[in-house]
Length: 194
Length: 194
DNA sequence: TGTCAGACCGACCGGTCGGTCGGTAACGTC
DNA sequence: GACGTTACCGACCGACCGGTCGGTCTGACA
Image (cartoon, rainbow over all chains, first blue to last red; front, side, top):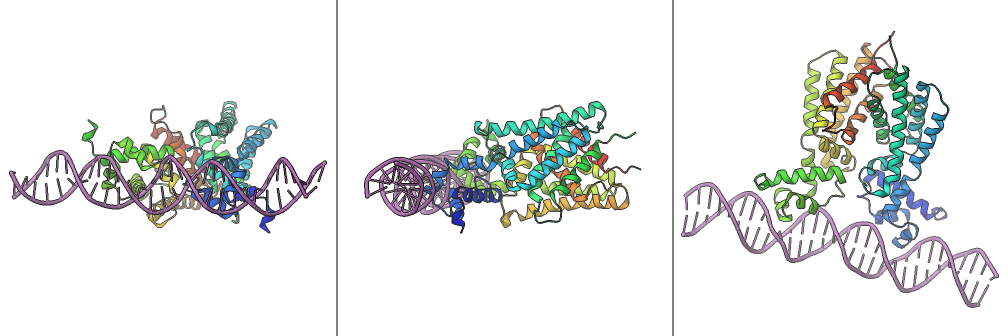
């Protein structure tokens, strides 16, 4: 029955799972095709290289997240509401693609060549957008200057990047709840008090 | 002149740097010995295997951090001051051994066998101590219940684990300053307001 | 001067890696 | 029913991997 599904997708699914569990380097092409149920020849018919497989695993995850971010920013809500929406959305998309997010975040720092430049740039842009949002909020008085915008940004992405390590899709806490909780802490820290 | 230094140390230094930059799997023994200036035979005279090298890179970092933590807890300061001291100390030791911390944190999730059980247990214990500290602070009313102790803990370790990725030893911000800033945000989030 | 141990050398080993390639079977099209 | 295309097979390749091992050099000590 699985034969009906495209080999491409089966390979991709197997690769995501293995890369997430063992890492890219520690996973051999043989392992991937073994689980996907095809052979070397079949694999290299669909993919140019093992590395191409890795890029495909990344997919448009970061690009999609960036689009979401731009959409939220375009709504021009107050800084607090904007930041909350950004965090909730980012947690949701990260949880929904937890394995891919894990591979993305773990391997991107290792592949230093120009082939990952696109993804790296997208990630940096996401980072910059959030930092600017916080900095502007602080400048306008909406957010407290309890810490630098850089530190707050590192904190937000620090949790979310590690989310795939502890998030359990079958657990009690749903992504929306996790996102809300995280937004609560961050906004509490940034709350202006007199 | 470098010949005066022990080969062991030179190998270890080279390994830390290469592992941090490229990852453990992507680094070959040949690369390490090439940089350290000795040969295969010399390397295997000092180390039992490539994996042994990795354990040595971990060293007693996590154990030392755990000892620091216990010492701080033993002082029985108020929750707020304890948490601040813990964060500042953890940031300081992570920054001081940034490369080792990076390798430790990145590779530990990949090596699933029993050889890393010791390190894994130590890390989990550190995690548990901090979470309990926060939970008790919330129970006693010292900390706000803005979010679950789990989430706050994930946030603290999330930033610190990723610190080696952006921390610059030659940068303006010193570890003590980073630690203080991080403690400020966390404590601001946990501050009880009426 | 003889001896011994530790440090180190470098050729070599079996195995695994990512990747190639000539071939074949199924199928839509005319 | 001939033909091109697409999907796939599996034997094979050279490079490189971690690790071994017989041997050499050197310095401390007797």
